[in-house]
Image (cartoon, rainbow, N blue to C red):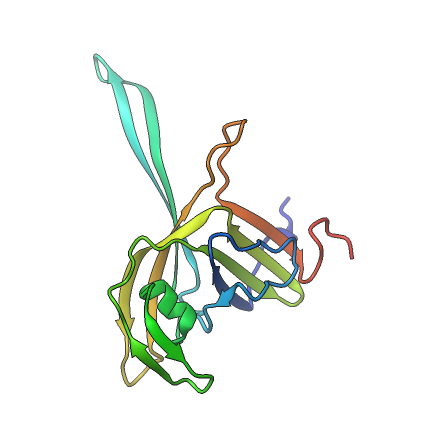
Amino acid sequence: MGNAKNANVWAYADVYIAPVDATIPEGGADFSNEWEQVGLLDGEEGITEAVEVETEDLYAWGGVLVATTHNNFKLTRTFLPFEDNKAVYDLIYPGHDVTFGDDGTFEGDVNLPDLQAKFKIAFETRSGDTIKRTISANYAQVAERGEATENATELAKREITVAIYPTDPDSDGKSVLFKTYKGKAGAPADGTT
């Protein structure tokens, strides 16, 4: 028998970015000022996750399948911000010299981006007072700067795909992709109130 508490439709979502050395909030604690919110996201497209693994089938004489190798794991997440703000420009054009006003204005130079820029990234979905977070344990990089759309019938948006890089293996050989939490917003890591 299934458990409906394990299934969710999320009412809201946010993406945050921060420097690689930023502190990851414990449990449902608030993000510190070192985390920038990407802003309004395309809710219809949502946040999509893709996993790529290279496989190769190995056969013995006579065409008998003996084994399959699985190598080169890659995890990406794609989202579409609606806003032109500092966090979005930090993702699309890292190293830019653009300043942003509180009233939606901006001015400055868009430089050739640093394509090797690294950052921490956090994905948060919310419904009521329940949140679900996945925060990069190591770092992320923009893997693809997709199309930017500006037209007369819909909000301007950009497609951003980030690759999540795991930590170095620990003494048990485990590499961590994400720190994750699902529970009450503002709750400490141990779930107590």
